[in-house]
Length: 208
Image 1: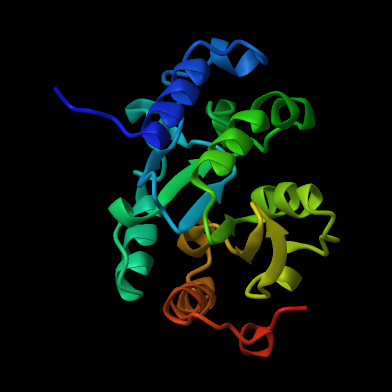
Image 2 (image 1 turned 30 degrees about the vertical axis):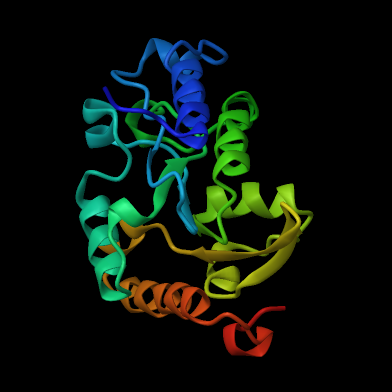
């Protein structure tokens, strides 16, 4: 019988709450809840906007083509899915992959905040404009659009220490616009650099 750590138990509690959630109407049209998954001791927490078609089928985040690209980007900086935590602002798929509605984000985002508060990552990577806008708003950081913010690391103080926020494009964007893949690779390198260096110079990472 597997013995779960306290952090694992708390994450399981959140997952159980997600899987019985009816706070917005998305539960009526989803196939599976997609709570998120990964290492309970992760230093890096990736946040997307919402599950897609394949994620809805499997109940797991980033398992479609965008997930394959995410795995590839992780591998290039010496990480695996098993090393990080991956989640979304919404835990249910919006119909036809439409943008999340404000009321859906308001209803669902407390689950993400609970996960963040349990894992307490060193780096929060926001994949796309919706997750970036949400996290920036959380920390009172002005959001000027994803194309202007991507790659600019922000520093915040939370959980009694410094945490780095890295906004970048959603991997799905690079599937439609292959030229964005180079930007993603450049941004992901910054994750590796932050993790490798104990003392981070803000100038090194374009922190404003």
